[in-house]
Length: 301
Image (cartoon, rainbow, N blue to C red; front, side, top):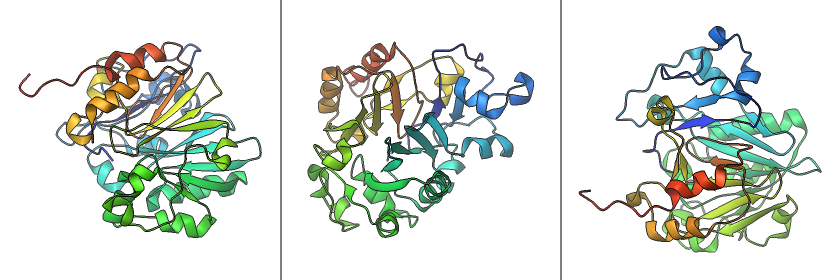
């Protein structure tokens, strides 16, 4: 997935929240006198930068806190930061997700690495959830699981005995064939419908990219790599943005732009594979349209 894109994460709710530190890096918990659990719900949660940028220092204590799974919506959606050594070396965080239904059943999203599976396994066991399926937002997840020698895609299937969902437009590719599984179409699937969500074909980053839309909590989109949040330098400057990946990383950037321009579902939550995460934001539709629908800049501009 788009490792070249810098990351940060922001859980900002409708309640008053702690002023963001502008010195770069993670919040100073001691200075604020705030417990980590309270801090998580109120301000910048995780941050990183591109490999070409010097990332602000993060203490071992803060990093340990950042890498723990945390709930975005109680009994509904969890974020599981990936303990990716290569990414962390460059100051980058990425995320996988666990979606829950009222029966304590779990639907995994983009869990393809051993370090992701480790945290998901602990979360599932400690809460007594039953894992029902794994949705891959796009074929790059399969490619990374195979190429980086940390892959756990087949292990997830064997451990939980679950179906793996990948859109047909991405299964017919060399990347998907790297891990040969019986991939199922995630759109209009009865098992997935049991989680009160919709999975839509959302091509542009790849031919078969999908968008996951939770219908509750004002609408929540899990975007995979179809959108990314603000970078650390932007966060330090107080800039909130949600953009498409750089055009060179997209199969068809104009198609991706058009799909975002046509997106009109109610939405107050945003959860990407990379970047800022937002919740309970009534202004999110405007934020989504601000940059996601801009034409790509021409080279040399």
